[in-house]
Image (cartoon, rainbow, N blue to C red; front, top):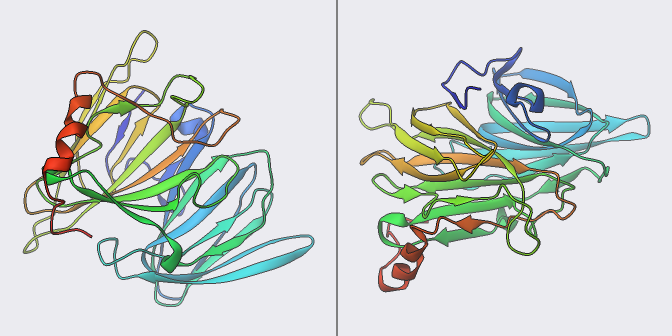
Length: 288
């Protein structure tokens, strides 16, 4: 199994990234990245999955319909992932969706197989909780647009993370690959990366995933660049390292078999102590 998909390796039809449960070799989480030219449009069937459409750059119109009617949402979007939080649209399973963009842009479709059919809805940027997590060189910003307990979905969990250049995210390393009620949930996870360039030089970073036990042996040390994807079916994941001078963005898509939709994690016992140092350091002033 290939867990690191460099940009261009995850192509599928009209998508620059097309990760389905079948391609990932798991049961639930999916991600597509759709690029549209000015005036472009694309339609797809949601099938057995729920989806959140979130602009990475540009704005779009999202129309979701079935035999009983159609809902249409205007997404203002943003210039790029580093310029602010975006609004988004949730579309349910068993629907026909059309995304159109007058000015063109790039749009993430975060998805998860589900059983309940929830109503289509609009999520305004002003209602996305922004969390500053960690301090010092572990400081990062989490845009919890599709987090559990924030926005209702059946199975899908999706958030964005901004990490200033030189900082470490996803640290201490953590995992969510065992069913331990109230302590840890089983979630597949997709990381999608973008980086801020400097004087025309593209950015880059590094992603680590290490085995967490017998039968959970995912092992990745990847240099990641714009458009890269890392698949995490199990294992300790972190750190996600942004090289100095280049801010790092990643989009996390999670879903799993648990009856309760919850993000419950277990820190790596060798590194959990790091959290105890955070109260003694300031948050990186480059955030939010």
